[in-house]
Image (tube, rainbow, N blue to C red; front, side, top):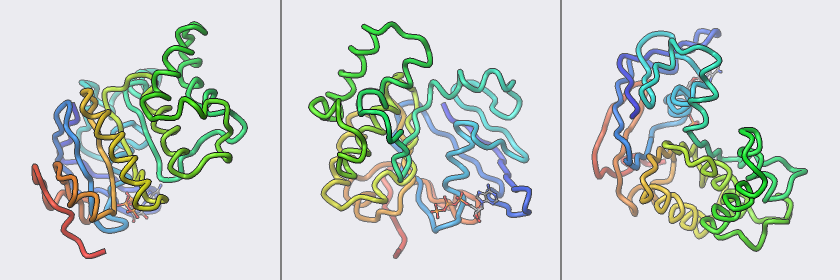
Length: 228
Ligand SMILES: Nc1ncnc2c1ncn2[C@@H]1O[C@H](COP(=O)(O)OP(=O)(O)OP(=O)(O)O)[C@@H](O)[C@H]1O
């Protein structure tokens, strides 16, 4: 499902973020991506949804070669990948409902289908009763749940969460983990970049550790392994 071989990424300013990365991830896996700050975790996840292209090497995602794919095919790839960020990135002037519906409206679904699907995902993240709220009327954990709902509304094959609990308190973080776990149980491949030793060590899953742009550890039920 995700296959990277000999991947290098050097930015125009000369910084090399990935330095011969090899990664294979199968459909349905739950993977933590760990490593020190600046190790290349975000760059690695950005290659998956083609926010960045490799400078060298192959990146295959859902049977598409993202290095050689035509620009007009990129939206097709992105529709199959949901992304959740540390800072939520909701549209502040739209309600919870509208934030989630937006992703469906751009692919011209009918109003009735949109409503049904949006309420279904809001149920999944336990926010049905907040559909009419604006983002700044919600707690951080609730905002993150909206952003998860938005990311999964198109039923993506892959969900990428880049430090999804980074701005949340521990209790709220566990709620988010529970929801990500449920999404994964439904068959979605989940990749989560995290600095949370507690989460990784409490809910053991595959751990891919990246340092200096390379995979230095890959364990099926790994632990966090850093002191930070
Ligand atoms: N667009 C860019 N242009 C230039 N350098 C960049 C760019 N994006 C990332 N970098 C650099 O590439 C390296 C890897 O960054 P990346 O964001 O992938 O690390 P990270 O492991 O996600 O770090 P963190 O845990 O702090 O989020 C860093 O040195 C960073 O400064």
